[in-house]
Amino acid sequence: METPFPTLAPTRLYAFLIKLRPLQQGTLMAFSGELVHGAWLKWLSYAAPDVANWLHEGNKRRLFTCSSLQFPIPTARMREAERDNIHLPLDPEKTYAVRITLLLGELFPLFYKALTDFNIQNHGASKPPFMQIGKQSFLLEEVIADLDDPSGWTGYTSLTNLVEKAKSLRLGKVEPLTLEFASLTSFNRGNAKTKAYGSHPARLPLPNYVFPGLARRWEELAPPELVSLVQRERIEQYCLDDGIIIADYDLKPHQLKFTTHVQLGFVGTCQYALRGPDEPVTDEAPLTVRQQILLLSQLAFYCGVGYKTAMGMGRTRPV
Image (cartoon, rainbow, N blue to C red; front, side, top):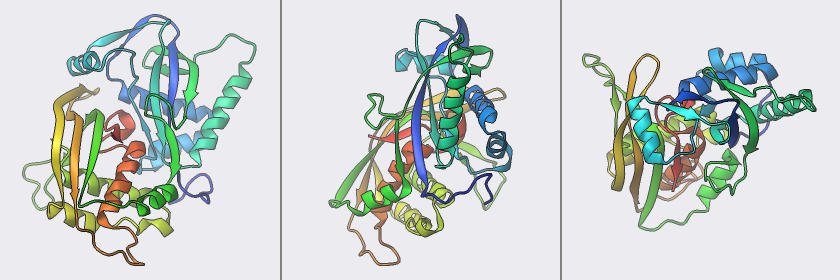
């Protein structure tokens, strides 16, 4: 794949929170994933127009994710407002946040340069708006990328580090894995053999929906020397054979209002049981299937799960 910049470094992943403060009082719809997506690309276009255009039009690999604007209110109230498509008040005395992840390491220095240039250009002057989400303008307050931030939603790593961590795992006969689906998650599903019924939004995180999809993302993101370490066909078969099962869950159906339609999905947590025994590793397959799945659960923290992860959906983390 051609990119507007060289891709020689190992693939690195970044997740950070952009803390924002509204310029004035106003309101914004509870779910703003589409608006944040557009605002992020517009902001990036000031620093690197070619890259922003490439991300928006020429590239279908979704090399970043955006959250909806996160309000400082209880989760239950936020979910109710999203479901009912309620506009929430913005208070200039309060701080809000957007979570951005970058799935191509070369994007990070561009982001850093854009931040630096923004601060230099406006040093000593009254701060101009940093980002406009819908009709509301926001000032930049802070960017957080620490590994130990209390939110639990920031960090950075590399695909190589994920592989080495997975190789070091020593698993019991049954290994638990819990995923939290913190924003609306859904899988756009259809039967490849017959299109008579059309596609539908799958509203459960079944293993054969979650993990083969993450394996496809690995194939898209990983450099050639790492691609074969995750073997999608083996993961699909392991799911079909009920090697991985749902052991417990706390899930709820949920829905959001996009510009043109209502999007159905779910939120909550799901605990999986990864059952052994493991097959011997080989030079061609240095990771067991269960190690591959646990690796992909770490990847999910950065790339999300399911549909429209670049527009606020599918924000996921292992618990």
